[in-house]
Each structure stands twice: as structure tokens, then as C-alpha cells.
Length: 393
Image 1 (tube, rainbow, N blue to C red):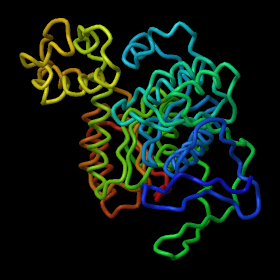
Image 2: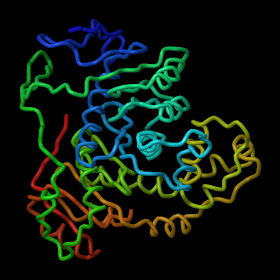
Image 3: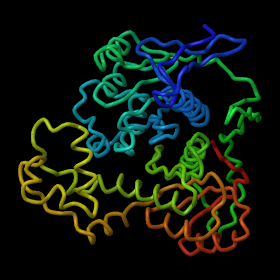
Image 4: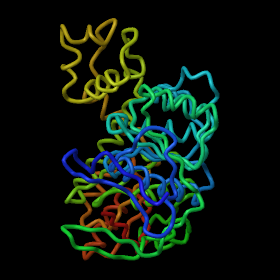
């Protein structure tokens, strides 16, 4: 099959719409549903991301994509009891396989942004992963294969309309890519830069030059994630998963703040008060996510005021105070930070420090590199200049 007609383009008024190849066969097979234009943009970008994560780390990888940027990305490390609980997978009886753990991490990092995601998996989707996907509001999944049990579960999702795409894992695109804007064709070489070589972190201009192996892994995850994130972009990573992604901002400090705020929310969800919230029975997953987001924000009265809390809780919980939040966030350590281009000012490092960042990878080359280095030294951070820019549009 060289061509697949789509329902419409980015919006319903944009017709006709299709994906096609002029010479080769399409490397995908739709096993269920009818994916749309944006679905395929998310699916194909997500597939590239997880394929590269798997190649770089040797671990199964997953990503949760929304509007052509990842909301989360992770490799398949085991989940401890805290993560199982905050990702709401502690009640799954099926043992979590590495690819299922990767998806739980990718989906759980930023559950608000992942709502209605398109999923990409580096490995065959198995029963455990399908059971996790079944529970979430999602548009579809792309993977190199599906077990019979997984396919049966996914085909029953969304009244049989859930999008399931199998991709040929051996497919490699042409080295030159094209796109059209306003009737004008753009051409460029594909971004085939290899981010799996630890040598990209060898240039360490900071006083602290120690970047342990786990941090190198996390910095690789950050950079590979950024390679497929709409620029400008910044990514915080901890323990093999993105915990905060700031995408598509015109100012880099806004990326750093946005991603840092998401990382703080991820960490605050592990606060004992949050984990002990007394939920009413059968609360919907989306309502629970929204409620947690409000509970740990400055707008906590929206869910704690009389007449409001009864919708979500069996008893009114105590508010999480600003002092408690600051104290808890200060406990987060060992976070890695990647940027898709250089940091122009030290204010990015100041903000990153507040969210537990200890390791940084960025392109370098700013006229104010000395200020950025000095700010890292102020907090004993280890920073690598990669010399690599990763803009993606």
C-alpha cells in the first residue's frame, strides 16, 4: 500500500487529506481504527523517539505524544511502590513487563498533558501494556508488533474504534526529507545525529566534572526526547524517565520554568499528603488527576472549599501549605536537565536548581557561557557542553 486516505487534515475543513509514498510501500499497517493526520504525526515522531531511546539505552522505551511533542518518555525500569501508586497501576494483577513499565512511566510523568495521547512503543505491545492502555483516555498506539491478547484488548477499546498501528521496525527513510509550507517545498537532510555516545558529555567546563553513569543515561534520554520535541524545548529527567518537558516556547527561560513546574508537580504527587488523599469510590481517573493538580496548586480551595471537597473526598483533607511544598521540593535530588540549544543566561540554571537538577547537558556557545558556568559552580552542578543543537519543527 502506497497511499492511505485520511478523514481530514489538522482540522475538519482541511480536505482532502492523505499519507502516501511515491516509490516504496508505506511502512505501516492500520490494524484497527481510522487514524487521522495529527495521529500519524504523533505516531511517526513518537516511533522515532522510542526507537532511538531503545538503541541508546538497550531498554524498552515508550512515549506519550500530544500535538507533535512528547508529554512523557521513559525506558522500562521497574517501578517502586510509590511510583506504582502515583501512576495508578498498583491494582494491576498482571505483572508489569519492561515495556509496560516504560509506558506507565511515560504516561504517569504528566498525566494532565497525556490525556488523549498517542502512544509509541519500541517493543511488541503485550497484554500487560494493553491493560494499562485500556484504562486511559488515548487516541491510539504504534508499535512494531502486538500479541494476540494485546490486540484483542485494544480492538475492544473506544467501542472498537481505537487506533492501532503496526510499523515495520526495519524501515529506514531517505536521507533527505521534504515538507511544504504555503505551497513552497522545504528540503533538508534528516537529523540523524547519534546521541548514544557518552563522549558527547566529555566537554565539562564546570568545576564539578563528575557525571555518573545513571546521569549520562538520563541526559541521553533528555536529549533524545528533545530531538523530537517542538522547539524551543527543555527536558528534566530522573531515574530513566522525563519528569518535565517544556516545549514550543519562544523564550528558553519559559521552557525551563514550564518544564521545572511539571517536574515539581511530578515530585509533589509523591508527597505523603497527596498519596493519602481519601478518594470517594469510583471517582473517574481524569477527575482524580485534575483534583490532584488543583490540590497541590495555589488554587487548592477549588477542591477543598465546602460544597466542593465532597465531590472528590470522603472527608476534607488538610491543605498542602506553601511551606510544606517548598520543603518537599527541596528533597528532590539527582535530576538531569537537557536543552535543545544553549542557555543564554544563568537564570535557567537558577530555576533548574530549584527542581533538584544536578547534571546539565546543553549545546554551549553562548556569549554568556561564563555566566552559565559560574551559576552551575555556585550550586556544584556538573555541566557538559555537547556542541549539538537539536531544534525540531
